[in-house]
Amino acid sequence: VQLQASGGGLVHTGGSLRLSCAASGGTFSSYPVTWFRQAPGKEREFVSAISFSGKSTYYVDSAKGRFTISRDNAKNMAYLQMDSLKPEDTAVYFCATGASTSTLLSIRARSSSSSYAFWGPGTQVTVSS
Image (cartoon, rainbow, N blue to C red):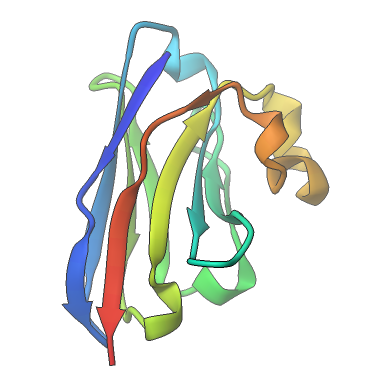
């Protein structure tokens, strides 16, 4: 599966962005999709995940109530709607897939980069204060 994230940009505090993750070349609908981010000098961080069906979603505490993950399996797309953005959200955002369904049931597993087989290049999100 090949992934391509897009939709990043520069916004002011309180602004919104919608990230997209386009998949090709595999059975995208069979896998969960997860968003990670990595700020300069920091480790890659789990942000949000969605089950293959879209019925279950998971968020890092700092994203709850502000971010919404979704997917459209018919279009091989996943999205991350980010509202009320803060400067601490500034990072490169990556989408990943290829984990087993059970991965999402464990906080440790779904938060680990090594759980995901397929990654796309990231998209930069910058939130100015």
